[in-house]
Length: 331
Image 1 (cartoon, helix red, strand yellow):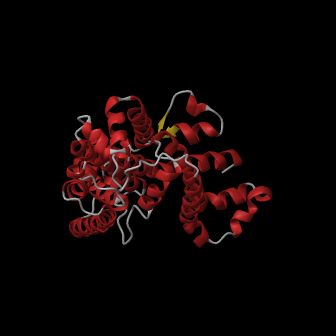
Image 2: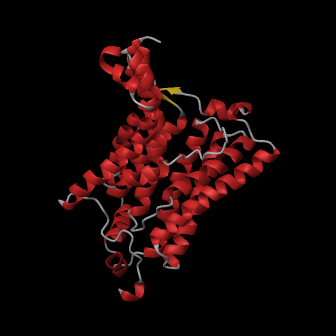
Image 3: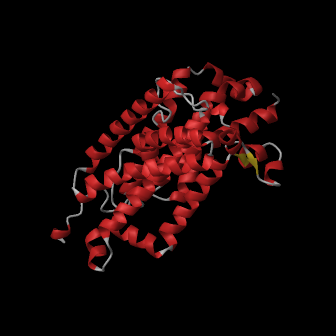
């Protein structure tokens, strides 16, 4: 592999690693804009991953897999909304419980299906073909960066479209503005006739459905290889932190997840960079593998510190009512 191919592969892998984070981050932004804090992203993505993969394979359809993953994630959101919006349960505890529940469902269903015959992704041509890279005309022909940035599978393009659509929805539509008002002051929104409970239910389910698609992407990206570790592997927790990094803006989430994708790609492609450019990146070959594995989480901690300092200066998009249950009787 020549130097140009190494750079192209590195850029391509950044996108591959950042897209599941983008789904999780955009989905959580949608939930948090309603004033609800859902710490169950990891479990929601796991549920979307396992059901999306199994049903998608049995149906031999990428579209069915995407729809199943979305509905599975949305059902997790419905459970979260029922507990926190209707029953007024503590949002932090409910989210953590949802993660535990989701991971439990993931391994229970996965091990059960594995015992009777695990669906191997290579046996389903429509899934493989649907997940194949699609070149964007002209742009993919740009030297070095073209294949890296503009030759990806359908779920990559879908993730970017969802992020941009979510930004436009929140900023430029009447329902999006109503949702933001609920996140800032649900009592004031209720006083002008906005159905707070309905809006919360709809957008929690929508956001969790988006997370579910992100989980499905990870299952396909790992070729559906089911083993003792979960496909999500901590991405849900990083997505929660990226919401803060993106300042609750779905468009900025694209940039934020790209940064995290870069550090994750170093773990896989750092050796190739070191071999291709020994004068500049030779030092990467001497970094322990364990540090590469911990790097995304170290960066997450740094991001939380930096953004917390920034938020104290009044430049935060944090919804004022985030994490607070709304009691209509106290309005």
